[in-house]
Length: 152
Image (cartoon, rainbow, N blue to C red; front, side, top):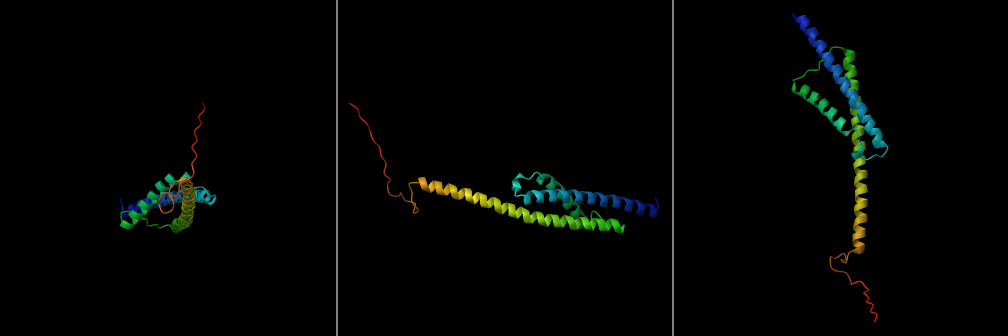
């Protein structure tokens, strides 16, 4: 194989890898956008169906980025249009993930608020029926009626 043929083959393989990465980014971005829409409706984060798939795709993307950073994979893109498409997709993904982070934090805060409201209601119910006062000691004895009825 000549040097020119090797370069052409490497460039073609690089283009396929870039196109595959763009597809991965597009899929991940669409999934995150769908999750953001559901979070915007007020759905709890725990009820979202996209979480597992989003995590799987994010791991694939992170692995590719790590390989590039380590130098084990190269994403040199000669085609300017393809390079611009990749950069555009990465920016879209970043914006969607930034929004996702904000929405997930809000969902977690809302869940924590609901949990605290339930806990407060439980504390109030326990305090209402507890024989102990705020000091932890038995409060004043409550009047209890215990009648016996004897019939002769």
